[in-house]
Image (cartoon, rainbow, N blue to C red; front, side):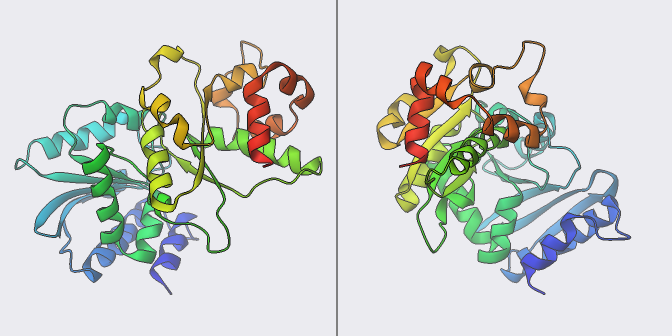
Length: 306
């Protein structure tokens, strides 16, 4: 069994395995991954109830603090800040690596991005899966470079890889909800007999990281990139770098799509819609009406079918 297969086997809680047992198995799996690259992992404590690992490892002359969580729910900003507090209290220059196998809560990553000191790097499940294939050091090295060059705490390692068969249209999204919107629209176009480009989705986990993640994708693989994010706030609050990157992408589409396109009544919170319902609603939009009254929707259709 490969390292990746062993990790995948833990995902759905095999029969007889509790979340606490999975936490212990994941600890062993992660320590094995680090040990194979002689990164000298050491666990300082392990609390099964929280499914987290506190420890450290060694890489290229530096010790790193490590915390990994595999919770049922997405990790909130408070948990990341708690870990950052541990890192802040250690030797100057210490870097922390925070792993969440259940993802991060909405805007939790942006909360860390606006902090003064950048000393924590974030990994999600896709990053860990990539590490099982290419080695933990390769993923860490890439994230360190993005932190040094862009001041970015989270750039998915997926920005460095492409399917062997084709270069798809890369859609950089704020969250998985944005992916459901684009997928639903793409499904409808296919249902109507139109050719749709192959799509890949890379999350930035927040509005602030959209431009950095998109630029990383462009520079690593010369991708065709668009940015698509649901944003209901004041446009004046959008990061300035989204304007700068406009000419490097096929489109930067950031706006109140849930309200404008789905036409939801005010009492319905689009953020609470199940993913499958959001996908279904997106695939059943009134395309003719939207294409006539919203140039941004028309532009998205042209890009998806180019």
